[in-house]
Image (cartoon, rainbow, N blue to C red; front, side, top):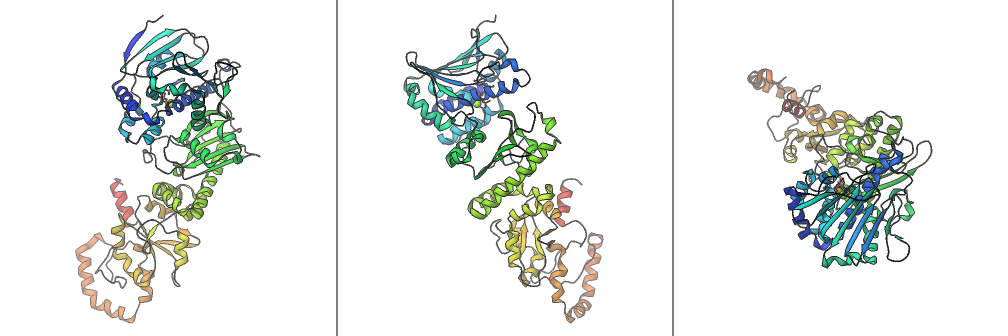
Length: 546
Ligand code: ADP
Ligand code: MG
């Protein structure tokens, strides 16, 4: 057998431990949430492995136990999950640089409440044990293996690993509580913390007592399987924080149980803030997938289209096999049906938010609008519904993106038959565009589109409610036709020489030089040909090296 071995924490882990112990003191009870969450993950992992190797699980009921020992001054969190091998212990608890460690240290804000939520988000929850313990021992036996491992540290910079003795599969985390943390030995305290943070955990969390039967502290049912009537807003928010590791409450959620030809439960959330990697196209995203309560995968991208990548949540279905893989998900008919249903749920949810809580909807739009708009390009089947949910700046409301296409149409004066828009780099540039002059003169509203995605949006949204969308740069005729007067012919004669001169100077760079009556303030402007790329799309393509 291998000997006890002393190792150093990786430098960032040391820094993290120091920061955590000193800055999270007033929220220190969250250590229990983190350790229970790890125990629950370990049980999920075992359940997943047991799909192929049922022997690993045997007939055991998976459970988590809390064992306070007042005489020894220890609190033990025990699970019968997957456990860890020696290598896994070393990798997971101290040496290997986990990408989250550094990011967590950088992201710490000094606001204890926020930082306490961040812990889970960055995958550094285990270390929160040192907020309440001056020594932590981990005793673990990996499922299917015979040699147990003991890890021990005082959180100062070093830890030891050695072979140990343990016959039952799983992990015990033994906290040697600091003198000022002995409250975490009290039943009432543990009960309250579990109810507060871990009630939704889908397996029993039991409190072992000196005398008598152990007490189950939580509901011990997968949260989403509970009837809606039983769940309060607060419960949904709590579960969201567990699921998304987000310290802000979600803007909205939808919980549905579907039975019939398709059988699934979905719980979908619209977050209030964007994840730091929302724009990183390489980043995996999606909702969690469960099959009959068994956790199968995180970020199942096939369950929602990319334009809804901000949605968090989960789907639990009985219609997929337990051994489903990412490859099987692709092109699977059942998955496609579920995806279509989920898209509808999200659009319904946004519809409802837009009509009953416009302020929250404005928040949603400010955060996720540019992503959501990709749906007009991607999702031809729902284009009209998505367009209805879009918000734009316009010449009537130029401060923020607040104008709906329906409101625009409602304001159209007699004689106006199309929806006009102008694309530009910035709102300021849009507002001062000479293209607007003729429209202003006629009192016709123009949408001002300044997001990068907008060129693609208008390239795909040809009409809304039977009204064509048209760029002002291509609609010169629309605002000129009525200003057509006998004077025009005369003016054309007068300006013929000037036009010819301008044409000869600009040469090939323009198609033609024409006299226009739609400018009321500027002397000239560039106009896109009726057919052909718009100016901005041309610029974007040029930048992209087309
Ligand atoms: P995260 O849970 O986000 O991965 P943690 O710091 O909470 O980050 O845990 C680090 C890793 O240690 C886990 O990913 C897991 O591999 C391992 N681990 C922690 N607790 C347990 C446990 N009770 N059983 C098995 N593995 C565990
Ligand atoms: Mg964890």
